[in-house]
Length: 233
Image (cartoon, rainbow, N blue to C red; front, side, top):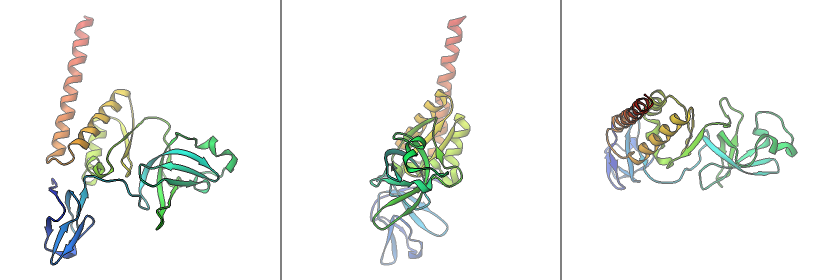
């Protein structure tokens, strides 16, 4: 089901009990509070914003980049106005503070989880959960965090499509960063497709558009391979 674009003030429901994120109640109506995509669920109606910064929430899985090694903490860029703090105790194994740079150094990329966010927006991270790790290979692409739901798709449908059609491994962080691993050709195509989704996030029939985009890319690639073989002959 495709989502409609709404602007602040648009009426999205006459059932005030359905008011979710990105909406507000005015009298007996639910209205959009942000410019974005209308998302109608079974219990709530929400609006997914089409612009804005990533605001950290506990339990979010994000892709971070180490920017500083401080005493007992790594400072991590999480593509947000707020840095993340990864305390030495949240590393998967016991290490001494003087050896921190041996395990994570400036520039390293990590798949991490937000453990907590306090009222002052102090963001604590952890690596002590399954699948969290250092990302030592592949490439990372960054998009507008508000477009991430379109890259993921309903119940993960879009990301599954990309993985199966392109043949690469991908992890989507909730902070607008996507890790892609595979052959160079597959990574290049995945990045192009992610950029296409970002640019067309507001359009209807996005899944069909992406399938057509990938089919056109495959036809172009096949044509180049065919020409190359003819030249060799």
